[in-house]
Picture 1 (cartoon, one colour):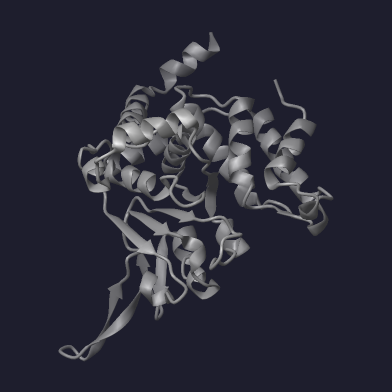
Picture 2 (cartoon, rainbow, N blue to C red; picture 1 turned 90 degrees about the vertical axis):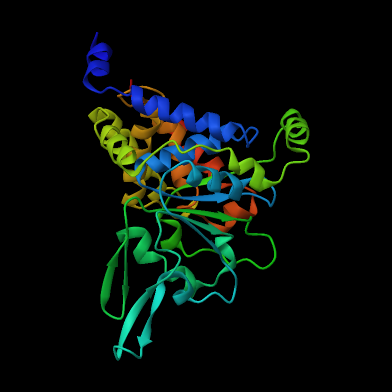
Length: 325
């Protein structure tokens, strides 16, 4: 009876249609990777930046470009390299001889959806240029503040850290990403489908047929609906317990911040809305927690030597805490 009242209170039919349209459009180009697509949609509804990690060739960049193409907003792409300077990202003041003063020339980060390819190939000083804009949606150059247009989302890809020529992202940078999505290889059947459906097609040809699905006003409306999704106090406490446990776990050198708690809360609401529900379940929290936490915690050297991964530890924490019903 309660659930029926909830359904009448928030009409999620428009959001559900938009989600299905985006899935269908992406599905025409990308075979498989359904989890990555759902997490990208969740990030869009949460106003969160997303880090996508995987070996070269698993469609990380292509999926990000597809999502940007389906939204009626500006899009820019930055290829991070070891010699990239902060001014190459945010912009710089340029002298105007006619007026005799300096004018701010905005960098490629001034867009709505910013795709940063191979973010871990740039050194720390360039990474630091992203701190302010990712957290506060603004850039300060020479004492002047420049506000980003709505919406503003950073989608960043990176290759696994063990590969040559990469830098480890600073912890402060990692904490600004809502999710870290780990993209795996396709299954055998998916790879056969890729080979069958994409032979003779260029990437430009595959992208050409993609239709616009969302406008900025749509995103604003759907984000408002996501914020209204109902979450019971016992589930809020469940989130707090999960994050608190990361700070008191002997296997961890660094636990998660309060930003992680808020990220789990917001993403659980968004995934509930994507599934057509206007209330959060414990399963939503358990589903989102690994993606929110895996890049925010650091294992002790001893645990790393044992071959324990961040996901293993998060799984153990989730199993040790009683799920509220």
